[in-house]
Image (cartoon, rainbow, N blue to C red; front, side, top):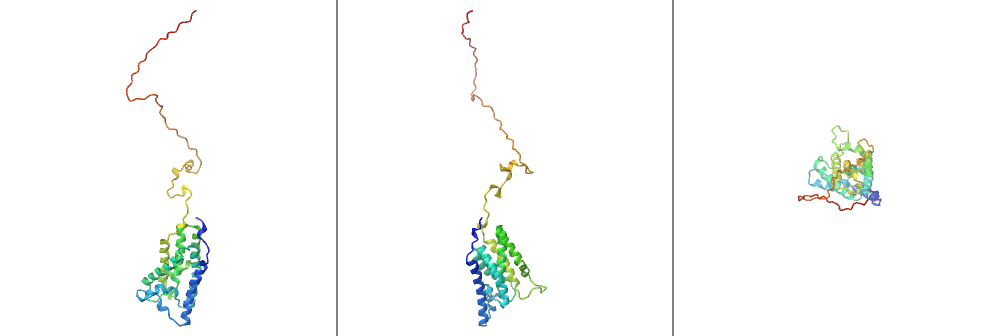
Length: 260
């Protein structure tokens, strides 16, 4: 495995900027023309609320809400596009749809808006996918995501003690976390699989059958293997399945005796 899969293109910067620009443009329309887009958000378990599955990530309550989501989106979308360029569009698209549907099912009876669900999709996908690939650069990216955004995990639980703002949709955050994990399992990345070069890297490798490993004892000391020669039966000069009778005949040599 080499790093040729990681190539910088203009889309690494262009995609996050364009996505965040769309969010700010929608908010500008809301302020400029006094639109109320809140009712276009997700209203759980209502037919009209299904429109929010698509529209809710682009709607925000105020500028502070939009700003809090813009910075993580710029960073996470750039990381997704650079390290998982082939999967980036699918993760964003299906991440919005699936997390929106889960929010529509489990959410409270209020309008749910904001791109925070997508942020949780990206954090979850990048973290779990990096661990699954076991490729060192992607594992490092996963650890970096944990360090920077690990605190987000506290916002995926209900808030019985009012430690977190009640306006925060923990259901949307939980839906995003689940969606990112599911997508990391569904989308395979064989290009990051380590290429096996040696026999001992095979999962079914048995050191007892390896000629080289047989020259080391259990303590790692080099030993000479005694050569065992197989028992060889002497070859018979004549073999027959029929019985043979031999007759020995003594012959007298007719040799003249030397004269004295």
